[in-house]
Amino acid sequence: MKRDVKKRALSPVIASVLMILLVIVLASIIFLWAKGFIGERIEKFGKPIEETCASVNFEVSRQGNDLEIINRGNIDIRHLDIKMFKGGDSEINKFDIAVDAGDSAKKNILLEMSSGKPDKIIVYPALVGNTPGKGKNNVFTCMDAGITL
Image (cartoon, rainbow, N blue to C red; front, top):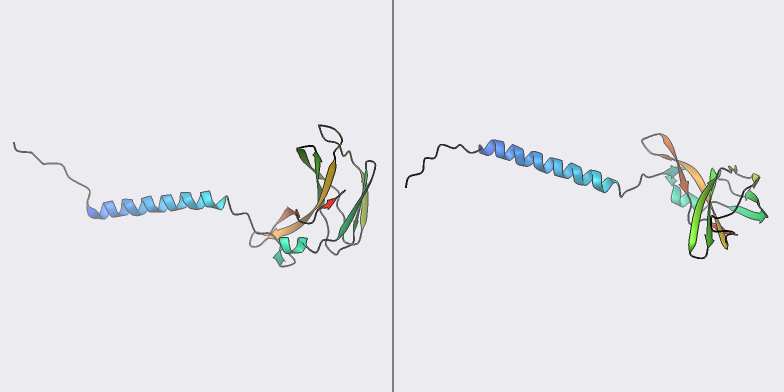
């Protein structure tokens, strides 16, 4: 039995170009996927903002629903993130209380959870830093500098 072979295959040059394009597309997809795991680097005073968080010096006191914040350091606090715990539940709320360096602020806020009055409250300061090369400001919450009430 004789086969009639009149089909043409791809030339090696076209096959190589297609393989290179396939590798480039796959590398782009993997890069975009991995980029989601790496956060933008935020700086304050020319160093990573995580290092600046260690220098934050503030006090928080609570009298009923009044929250008084005293910023004893030389770094401005943009706002406060307050994490409340009750049993096994927790909630985080953002409160727009800006406290400049060496200043204090007092605000009446409702420190209640949907499940009732919290057993434990932790106050975290949030700082503003910039992203190098992009020239935009970002807010960073210092999770290691929290104060328990």
